[in-house]
Amino acid sequence: MISRVLNTEHTEESAPSVNLAKLIEDIAAKWNIFDKVVAVVTDNAFNIVGAIKILAAKLAGVTLRSSRIRLAW
Image (tube, rainbow, N blue to C red; front, side, top):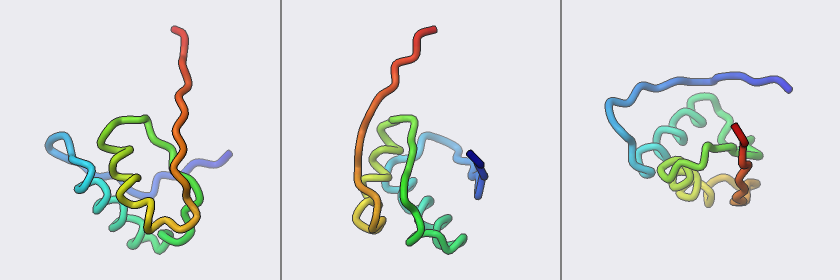
């Protein structure tokens, strides 16, 4: 598996879902990859999941699925 970081952004405080959705959309447009997204992986944080739900209608091939992995420490 190959992993790449396309962009990093600093925020001063916790960002609401609407702001994150706009930021993700802007970054995807900047890299011209919006129509190429096939999956989105999150840490299940409420604001990130909310942002992906906002963008789901625009992400043609992505369906919303949720799963949790429980890690034993």
